[in-house]
Image (tube, rainbow, N blue to C red; front, side):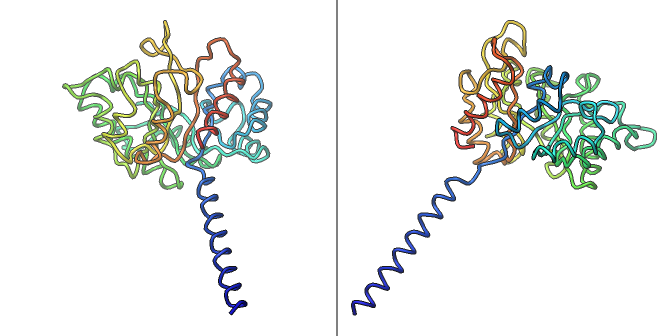
Length: 300
């Protein structure tokens, strides 16, 4: 009986240990991918892209998002060259910003321009999962029917990206919330006329603030629609985005932690990209180090 009791107690102890270990693993499980939008250190990247990517990797960043694709080159490197740099540093680039303008769609041919097809091709070479347009052509902000038509082009771009195993995406600023066409907010027109299976939304939770957009409201209005998020905070400004500029996370008016937590819970958010464009007297790289530490403190 003593032996039987010993074995039973041992089995219970092992089961308890396994359950405790599972709880620890669940607690440590990442809530999403945390990366950096390289526009945050744009001046540094102009001077020494390789050296500054190395600094970011040493800080603990594992993912980056580009904001410089010109003449088929990323920060001066071809797609294959830039992919090798990223691989050598242990970095991934799941997304990147390249504006898709009116010139990229040929109405007569009902097809994309060669330059946009090359954009998608090079994004795939670099290992991107998303090709994101960070702006909307000025000509499309004047007429409801024209904007709806261009949303069809967005969906077609999604189909093009899909052929290479990627998804097209859109990143907001502030005008989408302050501007209305036929009494409908531009952002709502975008959301209601794009196919979520083809077009992902990257919610910039800071840019919108000066235009009247509120991230928490959008997450409730469009649950599950925001696969990517630009993680920001905002403080008062005399010049930027309707009187607001980005800052170190947690010091401004956005309520950043609550927003990203809800992004995980109901927004469908998988990629959290830190972006800080203003620095309040600090060095951009120092801000990036501080922002990453804050995200880790918050459990990301």
